Amino acid sequence: MVVTTTTPAPATKATTTEDARCLASVEMPGRRTILMVEDEESITVPLSEALAREGFDTEVAGTVAEALELAGRVAPDLVLLDVMLPDGSGYDVCRELRRDSRVPIIMLTARGEETDRIVGLELGADDYIVKPFSAREVAARIRAVLRRAGEAAGPAAGEGPLEVGELRLDPARRSAALGGQELELTRKEFELLELLMREAGSVVTRERLIDEVWDVNWFGSTKTLDVHVSGLRRKLGDDPAAPRFIHTVRGVGFRFFGAEELDAPETDPRARGRAGRLRPEDG
Image (cartoon, rainbow, N blue to C red; front, side):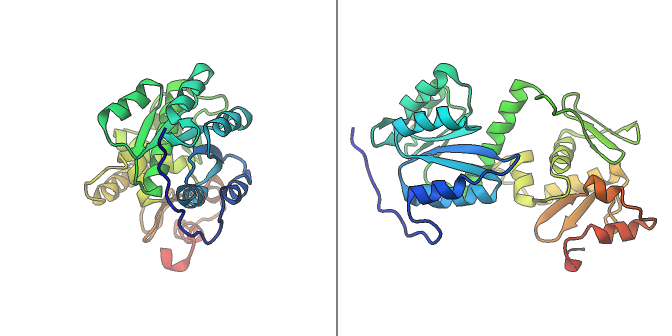
C-alpha cells in the first residue's frame, strides 16, 4: 500500500499526537467523545483544538490497530475515520466496527471519486468529508450525524420534553405549548426553538443555527434566520426590546433565557431583559 505523507505544520499549543490526545482527554460532563482516526498531526492537532472549542472531547488514533483498541476502550460517540492509514485502510476499521457496533462513522478522505464514497457508505459509514475541509464543516457534520443517530434510536431515557418556565416543547410529539396553549410553529421555527431551549442559558452562534437547522452547505441569505427568529418571537409573545425568552447577542447569535432567569422575581420585564445580557453593549 502506498501511503502519501505530508510534513506537519507547526503548532503553537501542541506539537505531537500525544500532546493533542492529552489535551482532548480532559473529560467534562455532558460532552461527546469523538475518536479521530488520522495519522497526520497537521490535521489532528488543530482539529482536536477546534472540536474542543465546539464542546467535544477528542481521542486520536494514528493506525488501524490503535483505532480498534481505542474504540473498544473509550466507547466513542462518533468516529472520524481517515481512509489512508499507515498499517491499512480506514475501510478495514469501518468494517470491523460494524461487526458489533452502530457508532456513527464519518469518513475523512482525500479521494473525491464517487466509487470511493460509495464503498465507505456501503460498509456502514454515515457520512463522508472530502479533504481539504474546514473545522466548522466537520463540527457541523458531527452534530448532524449525532442528531440523526439520536432520532433513529428514538428518545433516550431521561430525554423527555424540554421545559423552560411556562414553555414546554416535546421533541417526540413535535409539539410546543406556552402556558398550556399549543403553538402553531413551522418546521424551522420548531427546530430553532428546540436547539435554543436545549442550550438555554448559553449563546448559540448564528453559524451553528444555520448549520444545524438549515444545512452546513446553505448558501441562502442569513437574513432567513432573522426572519424565522422574528416569527418565533411573535408566537412566543416576546418583545425584542425587552426579551423574556430569546435574547440577541449582537454580532454573535442568540441566547435562550435559562429557567432561573425566567423565574427571577422581577416585576419590570425590561429589568429582566437587562439582567440577561452578557455585556451592556450586547443589548
